[in-house]
Structures are given as C-alpha cells and as structure tokens.
Length: 105
Image 1 (cartoon, one colour):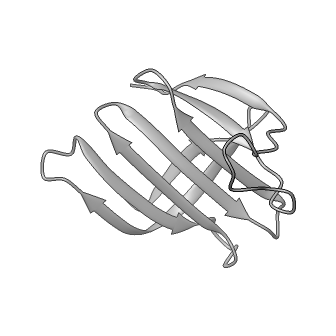
Image 2 (cartoon, one colour; image 1 turned 90 degrees about the vertical axis):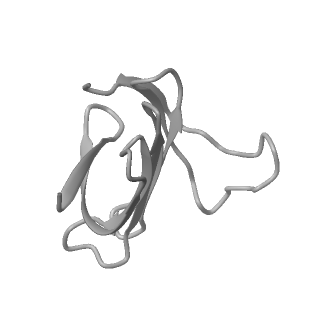
C-alpha cells in the first residue's frame, strides 16, 4: 500500500502518499503518516482501531486544514479549522463545516 484516500469536505477526497506506517500484527489498529503528492509542506496522519479512525490533514499551500473524528464504527465526522484562530482550549475550535461520512467496509 503506497497511497490512501480520505474524505474531505463537500464530496472532495484527499489522496496521500504513505511515508510511514505502524501497524499491529493483527491489523486491528495502526497509524499512517504521509504527504499529499506534490505538496512537500503538507502533513497527513491517520490512526485506526477496531473499525474507528481519526485523521488530520494540513496543507497550507492548498488552504486545507481538516480533522476527521471517529464516530460509530465505519463513520467519521470531517471538520475544517482555521489555523490562524485555532485555540487549544476545550471548546475553542472554530469549526466551519461538519459532514458525517460512511466509510466503505
């Protein structure tokens, strides 16, 4: 596996090249890290465990700042954030758009 595709906002998808993978022997949990092809300033991380996954996509050159939050197994909530006003305090995240996606099994 060299690439993975993540859901974005408004029906878009984000493809990223895998540069590092740390997978459990059972393949029931693990992490991937990488970059969007042709965008060296980008950073993508994906973690999954027992059917739930979470991810972050940061690509300043494209203005893409996404977080994928686990919901029910096979579902993820995708949100965007504004890095200029993002605050690390609880409840301080300026979420612009929220979408819930079913992940293909």
